[in-house]
Each structure stands twice: as structure tokens, then as C-alpha cells.
Amino acid sequence: MLKLVDISTEMYFVAVDPELQASGIPAIIMSTLLKSSVENGVKYCETGPKLETNGAVHSMWKYFEKEQHKRRRCFIKRI
Image 1 (tube, rainbow, N blue to C red):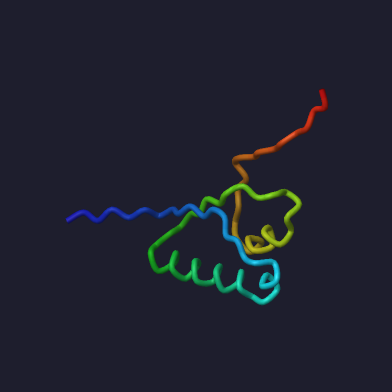
Image 2 (cartoon, rainbow, N blue to C red):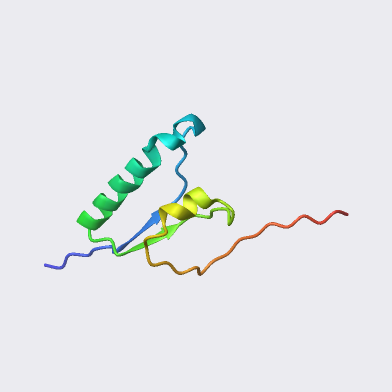
């Protein structure tokens, strides 16, 4: 019997009330997601867009191997 396993997952936006952001809730969410991913054999993760200047979001991923393969930018041109 064949068992198909998806070894990748997609993570998009997670919102935490600004008053609770420093309380460790983002860390609990990441910990839970990582534990579940490992238990289910996930090897790769695709994240949604994040601001280049958002240090808090980038710091959550600093211990992982990463490869930037997409970039979105917005520009303003006054006409």
C-alpha cells in the first residue's frame, strides 16, 4: 500500500494583538506549529510575504536554513 506524504507546508499570516506580542504568544504559536510539522514529516515551509524591515518576524526564522526565491516590492510614483 502506498502512503503519500506531503513534506511541505505553507504558512501565511498570524496576527497577535499588539498588547500581547511581548507576552510570548508568538513563540508559543511557532513552537506548536514546529512540533506538529516535525511529527507530520514536514521538511520544507513556505512563508507568506513579510516586510523587509520587520525584524520581529525575521527573528522567528533566524535559526532555520532559508532561501529567498520570491520578492515583492511596492513603489510609489507621483504623477
